[in-house]
Length: 375
Image (cartoon, rainbow, N blue to C red; front, top):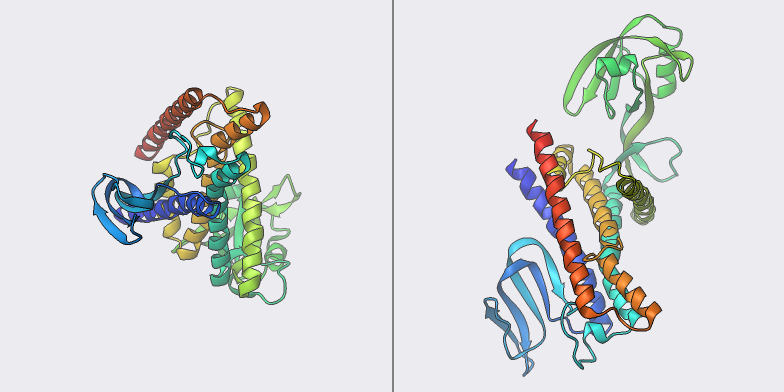
């Protein structure tokens, strides 16, 4: 449990820090001077800053030094990521380098940079995984890839079938049937063809465990052929050359992003239609538990999982909801369309209300997670 919590916190810290680094780096490149860029969350332990005479200094505590010129680079007590203060919630005054005095296109780029950084991090993680070797189906692979640990794996278990009744699960690896091993799925299908009504002994590997299942074959209605009601495929650990791995990582990130966007759209539709939130939606507790489960499978699986979390963080942050990056971008768009900004008091009130609603949602989902894992 301790290892699971530490692993989850490290992944969370890396993703949040990368997100804030995106905002910070972009703001600096566009000529702004962020007031503070911090590792971890306050209270502040201390930080480096450049004094008015141009020398770097260290300051202890939470008070900003009066002679600080430019950005204070701080270290904070809660190492759960980081933050950047670019002044979006402060009075702008006449400072030409203040965030609120920038043109709408500049503010939009800065506000969107955290999301872009999370997508880049996901692409890096997946590309790294493709260099090490990721589990996937091995049919139709391009030339130049390396495949190891070939298996015949269960990709789907149909409902109300012998496989489901016996306890076969998604991801199970078929080692043998009646003591006979198979090199590909075609030879396995040929072996069971015409054996309706016969009981066969399936040797299955699930994680580090091997288990035998005695299953009687039936005619599966969806195919009209003898079987136990599973979809299988040849899988293996596939690794790519360096540059091909980068390309595959970018393509996989784009694909995952699209599917996650569709999933969010369905979730939001259900909320609007009053269908409620699916029990599959997890909060911090559920994600931490999943992190431990994935970590037990190996480092490369953890890379995939961290990439998926990074994409989720990007998409959530870009939703046009107050307090999120997407909500702040929405106010910039409204300002551009109206020709003048939304009154500051109204915008701040909406962001504060949005933040409270998000915290309430986190608490509700976390409560459900605790109940689910408790039972």
